Image (cartoon, rainbow, N blue to C red; front, side, top):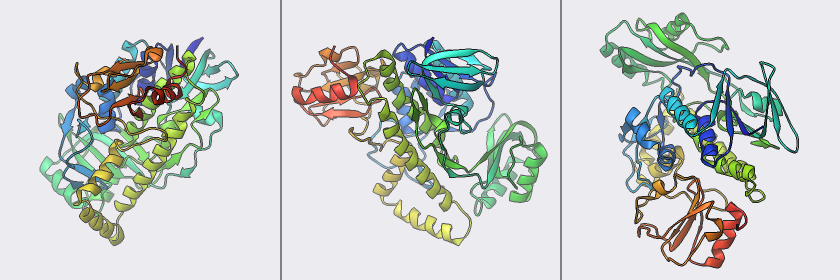
Length: 465
């Protein structure tokens, strides 16, 4: 019997597996695909995801494989300068194809001890008071204390649980692919600039080695993989030319469905990532939202497995993360309306562009998209990286424990030392005498009283040992 089964070996499942292994949890990842998929659905990581990578010692590796973009803030295709005084040390977008993100997270998860079983297809599950039994297509079964469905928008886990997935069904699709072209790149740039004046869901540009990435509205809806001829037809309809596209590396399609699971937990089974929420890729928040789900869930589920989690801790995963997803869906819906054709959306875009000249407006929207403005019930916001007497804050968080930052020198976490670290030499940038951080970086308490500290320690880290 293993301790946790993670169904789905995409970014959410892989980061969750690594987080569980950080706490010594025996973790098996079941992934239906025999090989990593070549599709590049996501092209970048936002600030909060970048901070998560830094908090786990992965950022340098990702930076070496990506490109830092400090060109400005964007909302619904409206670009403005990045606001001053942003509450982060990572004020940029990291451009990195999802194929590389997948590979790096897989290498990390395996390196820390997660077992990845490719070609494993879940067909059934049953749970009782002691655990969950997963049935696989090859006839085998696997038993665990908990199971987490990170298996995408068409989640088998969610369907087996009978959890509702209300929202808006797909009404329009886009085709997406990497292809070679038969016209000069200058022609592509000229046509794209003209088409995007009225069709902001269209785009085509170089990705290197003579290959272009293109996204174009599909002429209809289909469950079948797109063909090259279908791709050409869509390009001709949208741009008046198919650019002579040929030799596709890959072709895919995505729709505009927007859905949110009615609940994130059923007994010993939980949902994370696209299994819990789907939305169009406007603003590039989908992959990031899943990574942040995993970061929130990992330490809580590890506490439940180990037995130290206080009552209700695991339930805070849903109470914290589901409202965040709901807000992201609302933000994406708003951007989709603003990107629509016609004089109405164009007029609202012009007005919003004027409003975004006020830095506070741009900061508010950027904090939404980048997830650094999140504040959960019973907690404060997360802290940006801070200098410490020895090193810096995010380096001290790499062991996955909580952390007490104590400028008073009078506080102690001695009864929780296996779950909470301690640092006294803290920069004056910390505008509080002391702060208790959860393992995911959220502020759980601030103050200077040992008596007041005890309650938050017990709330988030269980009883004193």
